[in-house]
Image (tube, rainbow, N blue to C red):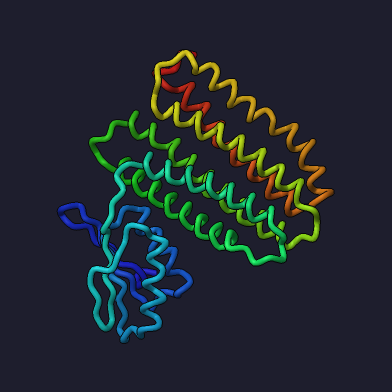
Length: 289
């Protein structure tokens, strides 16, 4: 494995890596690039002892779509250099974009399910593109948080305040995946979809409430509304039990096990976010509770 990746840290704290393509499977390269991006590397060289063909070069360059800040800065016969061209310094902005992408994904999912499954639907392609955008925002949140925590001048209290952003971002990424899989499963199912659509609309309302409540918490308002916010969040969390024993069995009967599974996982992700936000409020010095 030592021949796979050589890491160097320079005096100006720019982090660089060399990836030996002769010892890296194409299937692994995507995840190597994502890991380097998330961990804060500023530059990477993809090199080979052999000449890189134009076909393989295009394929490997396309993988940069998954590492949103990287772009090609130099090329040769047997190497490709990529470096950070666009740095996102604010994890909240990246998280806001992730929230917005998931919200749009919900709406596209509803539109896709409202159409006949047999009709080619451009919304399905849009859904997959939005899922990729959620992933890119997730990687940006992780990069900014890890880089911020790694700064020696950052106080421990500030570091702790960044962890909830990371937890929420990961919940959003899982939520996005389940929405995509739910649409795919529903399109392949011969059942009537009005029940599924109604549940997604209901989930979207809960998701919208979570987004608005989280925005209020991020703004750190010294407000007497803290108690009201926590009450709403707890209602979302507590409804999970009735949702599991009431809605899910009916969906399992009408739509099948996989559809019920993805709907339940979507609600799980929403309640996970609600729990994180509740903990943030209770731990906040601005809280009036």
